[in-house]
Image (cartoon, one colour):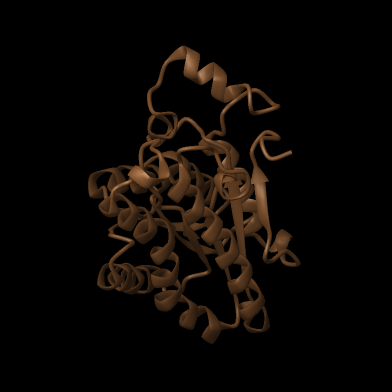
Length: 246
């Protein structure tokens, strides 16, 4: 029970990696607020983990603040924040990505980290403790062609993680990231462009361990990094990628 007595917010937790993280946290003893734009999916995951559900648009400041207020009202305090919600654009030449898609990707993948920090970091500072985990990507370390601005948004998240870590360390707040390779989540088809056996085989050929990431992989890594067992670890972007970035 690595997280026994801890409270956590996990964004984008209605499905995919976020759902895996929420389930792992609950299994480790944490109370979890499952936050997602998909209210029905958030409620379903929350029911599975005996937690709470929040409908949130992580790119909207008022919505993020409402989520934070709900978490404090329901759980009393916030020990852990996981910025997992993320989107991508379809594989496209960089000059052909629409301005609308660019703005959407940066709002959800980058601005959201600022908005949750604005709402939650003051609370963590006041308590003198906390753990923040940003779900970045191998795309921010070793970019794939035609996922250009998605790659850039995840590179931003990795740098933001390090900047947050060095600034918040004196306040007892640790900030880390995990870099998954593509996995069996709703975003997989978007990353690949289309989902065919041939494209899957080509994609998997770039991962030395020969398989996609799973929500369980992310849950295990997130549980460790947000637990007291990782009390000396901050500013790390851990690659959970089967060797993809070697």
